[in-house]
Length: 426
Image (tube, rainbow, N blue to C red; front, top):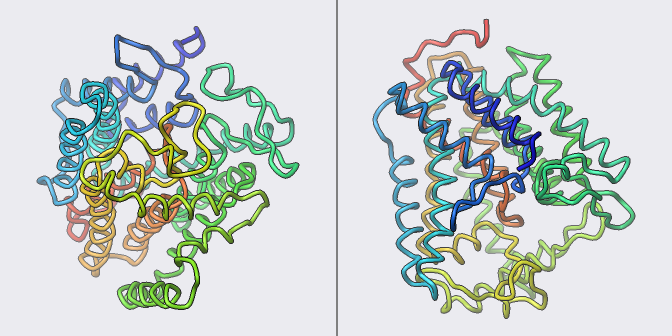
């Protein structure tokens, strides 16, 4: 870590310790958006990125202040616990159990830490609105930086390490990535945060406009097909609000549509990914073939994951001689901990969607705008669920996924239907 990164971390650490609970997410969001994973400290076999250090400081704060999350532990909380326990236990089945345990301990620490802290810090609809307002403001400078990068091909975040100084270029277009490890990850963050910006529209229109413009700019500057499709997924989920009573029917129609495609297509239906090329130079074929290869080699990884995937694809990755580029978060879970870990992750998403539906129904006597905010959280989660088919979150972008799950869990446990709402930040 250089002196600039050290000063940045210290300021955020002090803020995290001193701010009121409702404002405590701000230092974590700042660390996520404006620090790279290259900013880190190594202690023996353990690597502490800025996010990991902020998680540790946040945990210390919670213990010192005796803070706790709202309500009793719910089904989503327990699923997160079981997911982490199996992620650690599955390391015993790998070639080098101790090394795998340390690696997966880092993953579990990241995810449990973010989920737990946001579960504590965001306890009701007021807190969620405040979080979205802070996020809208913080996304604006990132969008400006990515515009600069898109126009110049130079990434200012390279001073922290972890990202290259000169931006990627594909099909003659510069692909901005900001503080994230890849343009697709940066663009995905913009896409999945879009519904969180729209949910501010009724009460905080200025922040909503700023946030929507920032998210759209981030997606555009990333010059990647995946984030654009994630935006479409977000918009589709938002529009489903009017037809929310028919959500279950839409789900079954989608399943039947997929089965129909399987019957009429020569390749599996998921090879539609190979035909996606919104901005040119898309790697949709790789993503489709990866799914086919994973299914073909299911016997190797179904129980507890695998240490070798290099034979799955024609190309590998620069950081490992043993692996292919697993550009699918569901399959990445399978590589880490087999089908049990993958299914537990899918179960957490399913429970998140289920909680959204329950909260919307429970709050039937509340203003429509309150329930709409909860629905928009579900839209963000849906966008993440779709994005996970084509991207694996190998940097700090995972924070927004588990943040969203945490606040949904808090609203469910807090029983939104009976909690009073105040205008945030009045």
